[in-house]
Image (cartoon, rainbow, N blue to C red; front, side, top):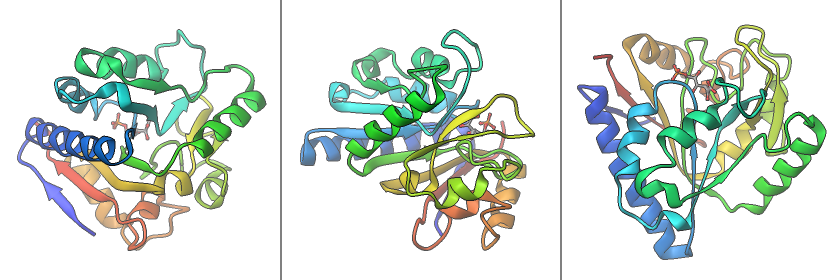
Length: 227
Ligand code: 6PG
């Protein structure tokens, strides 16, 4: 149940980028490759800018998102578009991106291909989750009919349909996200910290982030107040 608090988002982004690049380098040295899972939304943009400056052998790194909005390739709401622009540049442009929605709009074909790709990957090295004000994480939304499935399925990915946010989503499942050497919940703003504190010990079906704050999953919360 550890938390790392920083005075500003910029200080957090720098320290988190240092920590992530160290862990990726350790993984590459030990196993010849590394896998980094990141989240969409606005919170990680500064982190991505920091990471692009870190000189490591990005050609050995696979990057994927924790979730994707089920929209056409060129749609602005695609997390992948933001990722390509903000993370896959500078040094990090040498990384391999695993798309969660490569076969859009073929839901079944996409899910089958994605699950097979995820099953072929070893434990992730680093997973960085974001969180919304309703305590959703990745696209495991408390309002969605698929929340129990997302929390309990042994499949690596599923489709979800939030009622409080736009677009159907493809999301990694709780089980696949938790299969990582290092798990981080990255939040900015006192309102989000209050959500985390309330979620500790709560039912994951009503507060999905709680599924990553158990003694077994034990993701570390990295927090800074807003500027
Ligand atoms: C997404 C996500 C989602 C996000 C939170 C926080 O696709 O939107 O991956 O889980 O991390 O909604 O979003 P913000 O960082 O914008 O607050």
